[in-house]
Image 1 (tube, rainbow, N blue to C red):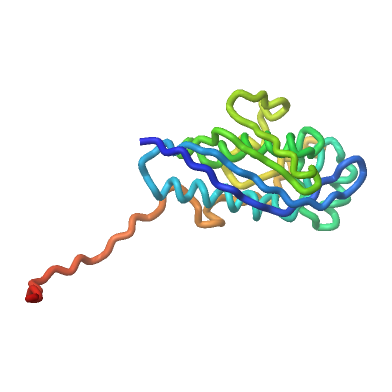
Image 2 (tube, rainbow, N blue to C red):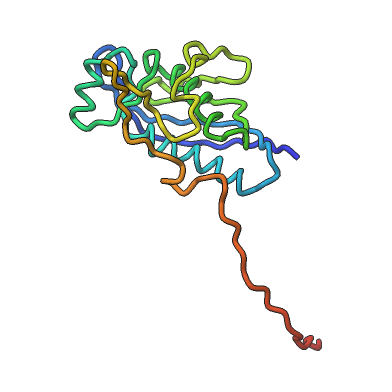
Amino acid sequence: MNVRLSKRFDFLSNAWWTDQLVCNKYSVTVSMVTMTADQDEHNVSVARIDRFMKDVIGNSILIRSDDTKQIERLNTAGIKTVELPEEPYDQTVAIMLYCKLNAICAGKMVITGVDLESEAGQDVNYMIDDDDGLGPFADEGWWNDEEPTAKSNKKKGKVVHMDGKLSWDDFGLQWDLEEKTGNVITGEFPKKKK
């Protein structure tokens, strides 16, 4: 039986808008439907969503991918960047999350909607669901990758530069969890008399 769920997630991140750094707090409500009967897969899906928002895009700078000089400066300074095909306005971030969260849940859960609001966006709620267009996120990119990544592979000349890529194993959130076995103790225990 499929179950409809909704959970709110909060994370802090920054955005590079029109040559200016904006610190921001995001609140995201994710609506989802379970696609398996396995409770462990549901728990892993929700934990993956939380880790992606807090550890991968949290405490980073969201930036348009064609702002290459600024990205290079930030990366040289050791600052984590998340490159988007559009300006990192709230609507863009909401669409990216809709795509990425569906990818990281790998069909164990389906994200049916993402509602995003942020302090910098004056708490206007952007609602993305199955019926909305994905714009540039309809193209292939890191937002379609199941792994906890928020970077594309960069080409430098003829060499493809691969950043150290995280996997869900790094977070202990792989799908094939080891089955726990234990000992069953049987015995004859006297019944208490009332």
